[in-house]
Image: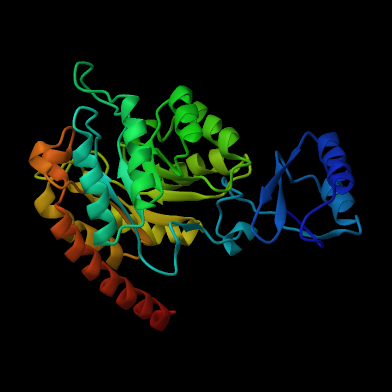
Length: 350
């Protein structure tokens, strides 16, 4: 990780740094921040001669070598000093909430428009809406491109940024072109490295776009989860949120095995914000509030919750796991109170 003395390198300076790194089989990837740009060494950075030559340049402040499987996402990385702001909220400074329907019904758009209005009133900062849906059964509803227009119209009406899942490069392009601000990578694609690379390339120069990366379905090591995020960050955009959402094997009575307890473990390893999805963890509306509050108690920076103005009229997972706006309003109020208590307790312990 190269930290220059100026806020960013000039074109000539970057060319000189790149030329040195290339001699040793490495590449330089700028990570553009709001105030300064740092430069990641992509490749094996252990060659002392390369480091000495780079540190000898009069415009280089220092080079941090992080021996970690995820150099950029590591909490010791200089990226830890950055801030991620979405929907007017800087994550880590107040509780961040994404809320909305699991699936947008293209035949009944008014349900989504009404839900969008209700999410804003309830206090959500980002509107969730599933345009395309991964399904185990090939004959169930897979989503519809028309729903993307509904999603963006709801964004225009409410002023809320939107979050939707993308599963391939075609959907990725459609979402970015439409103006989606938060790209969601679902549990089934969390280890789809080709897709993660494609997302990284597509948003590397788009700091206004963020990624909500869910933990894979199978209970893999946390290093695997964070390394998946590294695939995205390696192309220059560090706006990544890690999203525990329950894993397998399932716990009897729940949809998955709730894993909000990994939040403090993630925070020991990485600077990335943790935004927990309690809806998919438990899979039943009645259990969502308790699961959400548990996530906040464990130190989550935010929540991603499924909510619908009329869950019984929803499609996809909405009938069984979406909470009503009334429940969401109360939950957000309680979660904010708990968030404050948790942060105060964390400061006291440290």
